[in-house]
Amino acid sequence: MKSITKTVSVLGLVGCAVIASPFAVADDSGWYIGGNIGQSKAKIDDARITGSLAGFTSSSISDNNSDTGYKFFGGYKFNRNFALEGGYFNLGRFGFTATTQLPAGTLSGNIKLDGMNLDAVGIFPITEKFSAFGRVGLNYAEAKDNFTNTGAVPARANLNPGKYATNPKAGLGLQYDFTQSIGMRAEAERYRIDDAVGNKGDIDLISVGLVYRFGVKAPSPAPKVAAPEPAAAPVSRQVAVLAPPPKPASVVPPPVPKKVTFSADSSADALFDFDKAEVKPTGQQALDRFAADLKGSDYDIITVTGHTDRIGTDAYNMELSERRADVVKAYLVGSLAIPSAKITARGVGGSDPVTKPDECNNYKETRHLIACLGPDRRVEVEVTVTRTSNEVAAAHAPQ
Image (cartoon, rainbow, N blue to C red; front, top):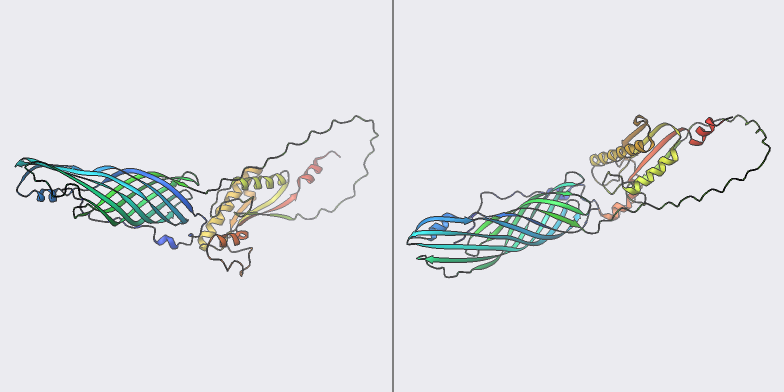
């Protein structure tokens, strides 16, 4: 008889605590599908098989306790920390052959296992692309057994028993996202199974697979710039050149700081995706236009200040605002080719919001609240200009 035994421990469940994390309101929801393939493994209860052959002398038992397992799944990710996932699994076939000497004969058994599952998945982001996750749920599996005998070993009353049963399952895994749409998983799962002949046991599945997310928006294409019209050919004329009158002395006003605010994630020129610190292509274009306006000017100091909204903890918002300010500073240094020492980057978290304290209070922590607090998520660049590019050109023009 084929039997799957109880193992000495059950996998720990991970991720339930992070569902209530302050980061759980990130706009990271959507449908996804995927598939895994790997090795499944069971433990054959050889002692129980030998006990079922009372009166026989067993010479050997040969076990087939591993096979290829696979699964297909689909799910909905509610936010960056929680998802519901269901699908189909096939754990493969397992079996044994017991050979007896006195009297001579054999007893063979095989089992095939497949079914459906529904899991709650807790997700813990480690970096922007790498995350760990834990799952707990139920599996509804069908066990199909088959027994054969030869020689003096008596046949079972039911040679092809089968059973449907619902049991718990759990697992742990890691995921790496190559893009916002495609990722790779590696995970270990344990399925509790009824073997159709009155026993319960565990099947372990170690697998890898791919995940595809639907509805991820691609970055907007760069706007096309029309080619300048060719200048008209100059007309040669004989003109009298008169010396210009002397210019009256002018009083140069003190330099006035120039302050530009860039939206973090709520406009066509947004620098970042929500809760991210990587400059988007649309944000690069906005920074390039800003850099082009400043080329040729003399600077005293450039201050880059990162802001966040009130969602999340103060410590996390401070760290995110500092990372965004540092990224903008690095991009401006590369675009303007000015010393890094002339640019100061700092983050202030959500301490200086644009929205008023009584605004956005009618929204729960959903994408509606995220949209309402959009003006608070910004990066401000303040430049103290000594001389503009036109003044620099005039200073070097021949008198």
